[in-house]
Length: 340
Image 1 (cartoon, rainbow, N blue to C red):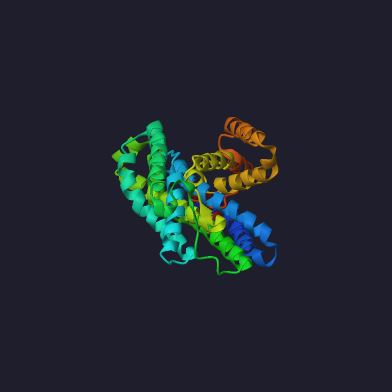
Image 2 (spheres, helix red, strand yellow; image 1 turned 90 degrees about the vertical axis):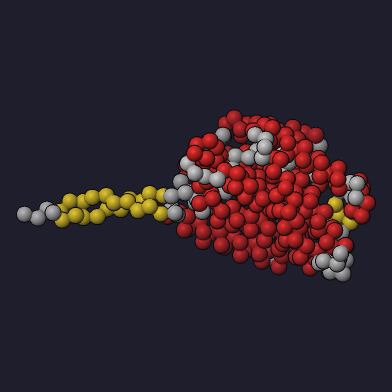
């Protein structure tokens, strides 16, 4: 006698059902953002450049600390190196917009030898050490007269471009930077290196005993973070048309990155996105309140750390199950009939 019974089978996939719908929504959003210079006034796009820079910086810090376990307060070193590289290359005749990716590569050249002494430090010592390294680079830059010394220097090479066109080009370069950093993090974390990084973050000794090349994984993520921060520094330069060493090497940049990631959710690609939007909105709303602006930001950061340990995106994900950039695996059940 034949009987039919239902059994539950499972499929293991890299994307949830909601991820496919969110991918379509993201493509539409990217298309709208790309066309924005044709739809709104330049004041809007000029302001959004700052948002895109914050997204890129926060994504790079989150990659370094949230996935690699390397808590740094010195990534402003590469923001400054990237900014000054654009200035130096422009003085040599390189078109400033083309100098931005070259500045990012310059940061990789500096980051490789910098990582050798930095990785000899652990935990809090690594965080403080990266801050010291950033200060060393600032002190070196202010002693180079051709880079303007302590007073900084203006950017050359953009004076012949129409102001409206220049604003649109800067906007597109900033948008490309934000998209590139998000896509780079996503592709990196979906591979074997991403699994290695998270294993190193959770327990470095156990990861090493499992055969993971800990030093190589940390070095790769450190270089990638330096490249992204350097490109962001280059975009800041072409946007502001000048650079000042005290401002561009300021530890305030690291404070911004940490705040954004804590608010949005550390250890997720979506966290820096939502955190950057929230931080950007707070900047626009509270910037006229003087010192109270910083007090309110600090209070919000403390409240988020205490009440939302996984950030705003962690709260959204727990309630909706939504994942815009899935880097793990999903188990989906499917029913099937078995005849016996």
